[in-house]
Structure formats: C-alpha cells, structure tokens
Amino acid sequence: MIDPYVYPGTDVLLNKESIRDTRELQAFERMATANRMETLPDNTPVTAEGYREIHRYIFQDVFAWAGEIRSVSIAKGGFLFAAPQFVVAALEPQLKKLRAESLLLGLAVDAFATRCGRYFGEVNAVHPFSRRQRADSKRIL
Image 1 (cartoon, rainbow, N blue to C red):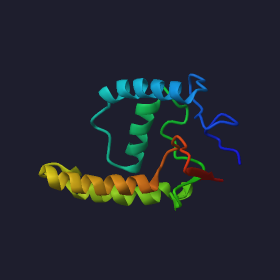
Image 2: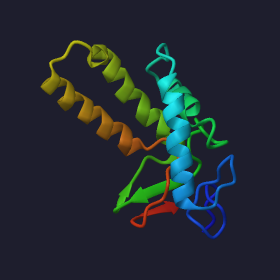
Image 3: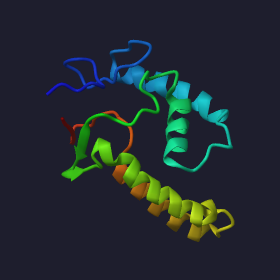
C-alpha cells in the first residue's frame, strides 16, 4: 500500500528539508513549529477553514501539505478516523458547539478542563491532517 505522505519504504513524513531520519525530523519539527506557535495569529476564525489555516501556519516550514485535509483514510488501535471526504462535515459541528460555548472563555479551571478535553477528543476522532504513523496505526487507501 502506497502512503502519499511518507518517503517510500519508510514511515518518515515527506518534508521540505528532505530529512529521512525520524528523530532528526522530530527535532526539526519541534523547533519550526515552536517558532510559529509563538507568532500564531489570534484572529483566526473557529471554523474548519480556520483550523486548516492554523495547521498551515504552524507546519508551513516543515510540510508542503500543511493545512490540507488528508487524502487517505487512517485508523489507529482498531479505531477508524473520519474518512477524508467527511472530515469537514465531522469537524464543523464540533467547532460550532465550541463557538456556542463562547470558546470556553470565562469557565472555571475544572469546567474548562472538562469541556476542553471533550472537544479535544472529538477533534482528534476526526483527525483532519496526516500525522506521523505509529506502530499501532495504519493507513487505509
């Protein structure tokens, strides 16, 4: 099975620096994304498109496909994430609910943690973008 996000015969994500070593890529990715996160725009809309803009901004120095919805189906630990053609349809209702909760602004710490954890889980279940493969994950083309 051909994975369009990795170098052939590896699990190393295609990247702008042509780094083929997983640890080297992880180190580069940490540095590049940390720098971008320090300057992340604060006016990005809380929508599926806004989420794509954030991903694109953070990972633009690392991956050419940053901000693009993945084109392959993926699963991990027996859990199948949203199929690529349904990512936006699955993501947008969660973001709409988050907006309806005023982005969780003003909540007490415990309430914020509970609600934030719920949204984090829901967005993770959609899994909009390609991610580094782990031993217990697989791509389904």
